[in-house]
Length: 227
Image 1 (cartoon, rainbow, N blue to C red):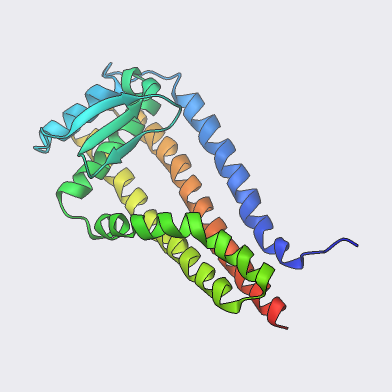
Image 2: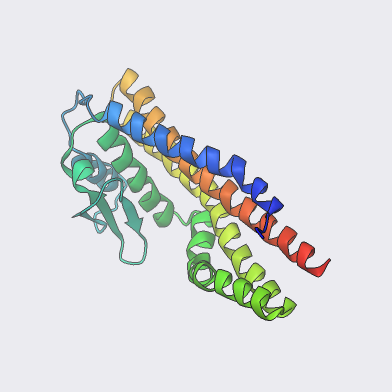
């Protein structure tokens, strides 16, 4: 006998959007990574310029391995860029580097959603690691308490994803303003950098919808088990 899980249909739109978002960021980044900026600056140089012009001389910039692994570490005040972004002087590299610098600007100016998201990190990490274990254990031993606790922990993951959206969109907005104001990119280059950052933002939207869909599915599974 095969068990048919009708709740899986809830995940299908999110799965399709996730596939599209991944394809979109890969194709967009690849396209504009082959178009070099008129300024000739590398991603690291562009980020350094933005940081210094905003008085963030103490924020270091490091190169890290991987592809699109770029991030800002608020705990250590370090902006970490993938090798292609760090050394690259393409529109894509500068756009991504400026985005990460935008997170440093948020941190320096006490941007509330970023502070809230950073506070959620420990709880979200616990929820990500333990929620499914508790839920599966709850179904195995038929314990509603374990299931509900697992769902509660997973809700923290969902909240983290939701809060991430305004943080990422705001960082991109700050980045584009900086790139324009300080003449790091010119004219049409700003529009192209925006396309790269919009494609990256879509991956966060997809991740949020996936998390919300998974939470809804868990609630439906719990309801079905009680019925």
